[in-house]
Image 1: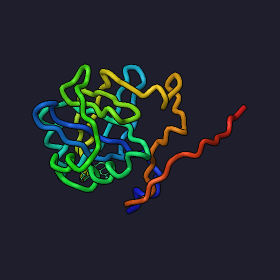
Image 2: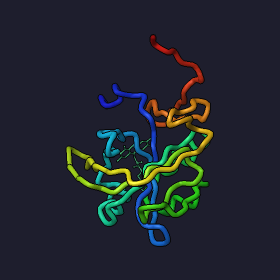
Image 3: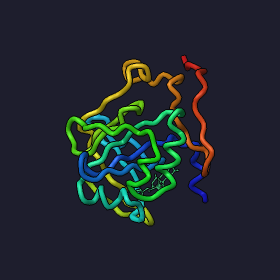
Image 4: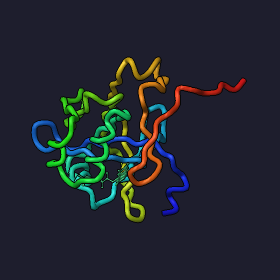
Length: 172
Ligand SMILES: Cc1cc2nc3c(=O)[nH]c(=O)nc-3n(C[C@H](O)[C@H](O)[C@H](O)COP(=O)(O)O)c2cc1C
């Protein structure tokens, strides 16, 4: 598929539903920032996903940042359909601060979102989401700058993933 020309892309988790009622998680590469202030992000979700039904119903979602250590769980939620799969994972779902959808306690970061726009394009629906609260692991960021050794996950193709080397160049 030609969209692979844009890869590697980072991989995220989309949590949907309501804590104590019905909750689901899926993997998503097609996530990006569209506004810094207020913080607005977009995520493309196919209507065939169980997640789609829950986002339509509740109008809220959480974007979680997984680490390489969580790859097996990322693969389970990215390849199986519906909440039953969560029993096979070690994802720790705990109540969020501002939305009814839970956050993932063992993720590197969680962004609590309210859906403020919805645009169908081709085979996906682009959800425009305002970030209303966020949480992150102290060890994974320093003043919002990611620490590469935390193991941020990137997707190469199908079942191949990578992470970033703790090595970089600074331009002058
Ligand atoms: C690494 C990875 C990235 C994915 N990115 C997306 C995405 O951006 N949008 C999407 O709709 N599906 C994406 N998927 C597919 C869903 O995660 C997958 O269909 C999942 O089983 C849906 O779960 P659900 O039906 O329980 O919601 C991705 C899958 C993987 C493995």
